[in-house]
Length: 217
Image (cartoon, rainbow, N blue to C red):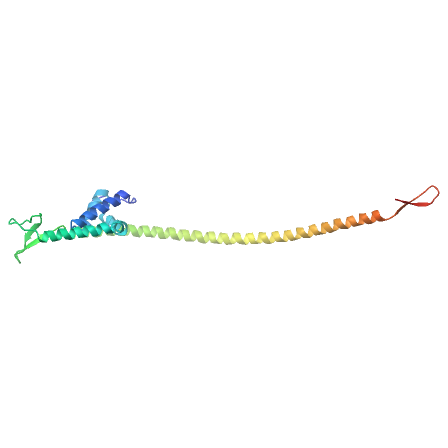
């Protein structure tokens, strides 16, 4: 049984998957056979290869798929018209098995699918599906944790905004008080200048030796 790998797909893995799957389509084989061959080449399960093909790689090779299908159809037509030899094998190598009830030859190709292969594919797909479910649950838990963290940060942000608003209010009050104080100090300074000017404008007198008052300029 091939090893189950959990690492990411590389460009080389995608290229191998595309080449082998296109070859199987071109040769008239099943995609399941292609996925099993790819899985053995790169160490992955057939289910994982099928999921990668249908979810990502197939979209990049739509034109090549149509060409491969056209080539397969042409090969099928050639097989139908190929002459059958007496030994029971056609000129292009198909195996013929006689059908006793009808007397005709029954052609078996690589399209024949066994029950064991289907069961093996379903089991591998179930394993891949379970892994996907576990991954989805992990992502859901991480998403819930992120939402809880975002909610906590939102509450902290609201708290900080409230504190900022309070600080701004206090700042406006202090600023208004400071402006009022500056205005009071300015008025007091102007009043002091007026008093000094009035004192300077008043006439001054002094008494001479004879007891007479005379004005001092």
